[in-house]
Amino acid sequence: MAKASNILVIEDDIFVQQLVGHVLESGGHKVSLSSTAAQGASLFSSTPFDLVILDLNLPDEDGLTVARQLRSRSDVPIIVLSGRSEKASRISALEIGVDDYIVKPTDPQELLLRVKNLLGRRGTTGPHSDTDEQLFHFEGWTLNQNARTLQNPDKENVHLTKSEFELLAAFVKAPNRVLERDFLQDAIGRLDQPDTDRTIDVLIGRLRGKIEENPKLPMHIITAHGLGYRFATQVDRT
Image (cartoon, rainbow, N blue to C red; front, side):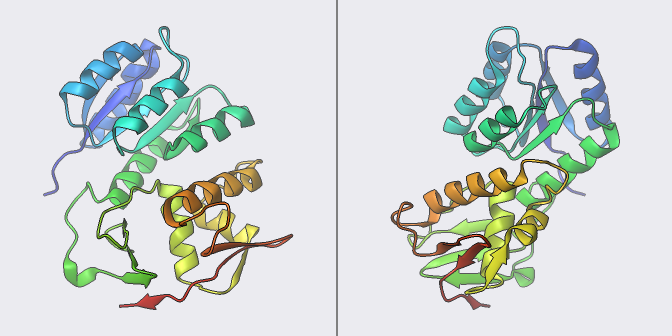
């Protein structure tokens, strides 16, 4: 049986906090609840968490600031659960490096499934067998499809958010082909968001920052103006 995941919920609305906690516990997760940014930071410093669910409207600090602080300290997956539905908030959270953004109110089952999928993609819901690995190699980099990891030429793991990983996986599976925006939107599973074009651009920029020697003069992810992007690098699969 897989080890239960440990999840931190930072949410000042007590009703929502208790509801989210109950939903997660019903899914077999361990849950710690916090009503403020300061309390959440204290818990995060003392306990190893597998995932953080974060509200943006906190009484003592803006949630985007909290997300930025968490990301600077850890690559822990972060799901924003917020009443802010405007494009600027979603894009800002994405640029910081959150892994998912859910607008309140949300269906409890949908929240549980998103948590399950994200933890599964991070490899925290159970071990992966080496025999199941699907490896893609390019310019010294190695992407492990099943373990959901990316290793640089120095053999160091590079953290990718869920959406960044999905984009890179789409590219390495179709090298030297122009992938149109509709295809990339489908790859990251954000077709229900009206600003997905901008989301794709932000994700491409972040991904370039992680795999390109000079993100301003990319050699791997090339823009196909008016169409989408092309992964202009040879990929070997093992």
